[in-house]
Structures are given as structure tokens and as C-alpha cells.
Image (cartoon, rainbow, N blue to C red; front, side):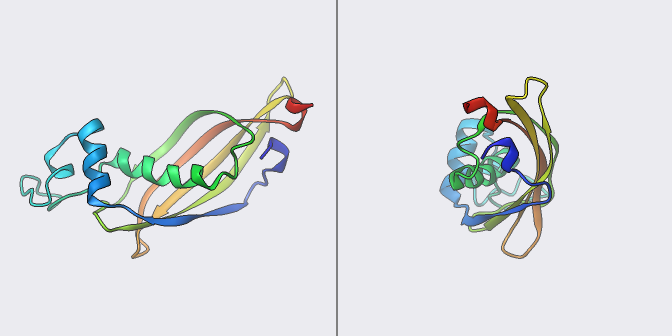
Amino acid sequence: MYLEEYQVGKKYYVKEAKITSEEIKSFSKKYDNRPFHQDENDSTNPVFYGLVASGFNTLCFAWSKWVDMGIDSKGVLAGIGIDNLRWLQPVYPGDILSSVCTVTGKKRSSNKKTGTVYFNYQTKNQNGDLVLTFDSIVLVKSKIYDE
């Protein structure tokens, strides 16, 4: 999508997906190797009992489902940032995560060839519990860019 095609307030519903223990362990081993991200029987953490996904695993997992949809693939130039990132509930193996990506704003750049699109991203588990929320800022092409 180009800058001009984004509509503030538009919601995109991201296909739900199940996170597996294998995915949690693989991500953790590479990026956040802690016992509660590796061991189903970990009892060293008084907050989480057993295996839970790293918050960054949850973020990457949820965001990848948006990217897989391909809605914005034609116009995205770069991610600029993430604001207000919050992990609100633990994510466990077998949780089914679904997300809503809402366009909250857009602004044309002074060069007129690009612009910034602002999104709010919310992810819930199969029980309807909000597990992740963040605001994403993305640099996108304007239609003028390809002229």
C-alpha cells in the first residue's frame, strides 16, 4: 500500500496462529536464553510456572503474522520505531494469538515522495486476554515515489 491508501481508523484483522513450545524454545535459545523460556518444568520463577514465551518472541511472532499478510509489502521502506510496547500477560505454548492492527495516523514527508504511517497493534490470546500492545511507526512510499 502507498501512503495515500492508508485510512486513519482502518482496522486489519491478522490471522490467528498457535505458538508452540518448539517455537518458544528455539527463539529463546538464540535471543533470550532463560530457564522459564526453555523448561516446561521450571519452578525457579515465582511468577511463571513452566514454559512461557519471551516478550520479544511474542512481539516477533505477532508482527510476523502481519507481515505475512502482505498488505503493506509494496510500499514499506523501513520501520522507524515502536512506542508504548507492553507485555500484559504471559504467553504459553499452545496459546492461539490473534491481532488487530489499526491505522492511527499518517503524515506526508516534506519530500512528498514518502510518509509516515502510525499503527496501534494489539494481540490477544484465545481467552480474549490482551497479551501485547504497541504503537508502530513505519516509513512508506507515496504514489509520487513510483512516478
